[in-house]
Image (cartoon, rainbow, N blue to C red; front, side, top):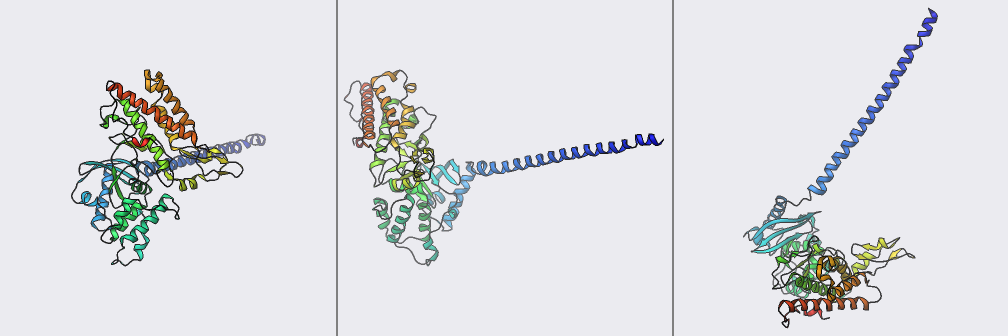
Length: 441
């Protein structure tokens, strides 16, 4: 009996150990499953929050756009902001909302009609209160008002700071704008100063407002209300359109589509040359793509999005960064070269506005695939070669080569335009085809 018990005695003990081991293993698996389930739930919920904050909150909706404009009108009635657009937007109803065009990180772009004219309403930030207030107003007696010359002085300082221009230079307010500010007969109210200050904090507004008195290649600012400003509505480019611009939307005379493309290309050349030479500092475009340009009815090319446009002094500051290779010196379409000895990017831009235009716009336009049977014509072959050379020509120490390429493009496009017009008119003398007379630089 003892031997039997001794033989059977250890059995229950081993069985208990086995059960405990299985229980422990099951417990560990359950803990792991629970942890994975909890982690998955956490990731899912955070994903929903991320989607809501980055996509749904920035989704371009009519309801949200209208509420934003309603808040602008409420602040206008309270006397917090003002502008020449406010009365029509908030009182007479002569600004008709059409649709939301763009909304991201607070930047709002809205299509509307102002007294029957299509316009685009823009603001870098959604709310008027999001802009920094003019510090001078915080310490000024509400009964006191700034004289026009004081406004000119503070506006000039803010514009130079926004554009990155040297304070010791001769840059100032644009002639027509500055003249209007100086000739104002009465002082500025607090609402006017607050509204002006919110506009001057928007780099794109400053660029457009300053350059519209100096260049026809930028969109015109038509009016403002608080922090929102209205610019002319134009036919913008599209990357998916083989002609980039919807040519049927502009009434540009009895020209064929190819003639219109040649005229637009000539206007691109004019814009590139003028941005290089018309101002006290070269103007660099660092985001060149079809969507950032538009055309007027006379086929003039217009820069409509200049968030990534910089004058030479600011461009140099942006490019002059630490680097380990040339890729570190690329700032969108504006590229520089890395000095491996100093590990610093050169402050001088290697490529040019025209070179990027040739790469991104001219090369697709004048490709053999798009031209079809006409691709083999002598002038078209010469143009394709000139465009390719332009796309590969850097603006280095030798300034003569880019200028030679630019003149060659001008010559070929003018010949093609003249050829197309002459053939369409049955050999007429082609009067009026040189609409861009300023191209003869």
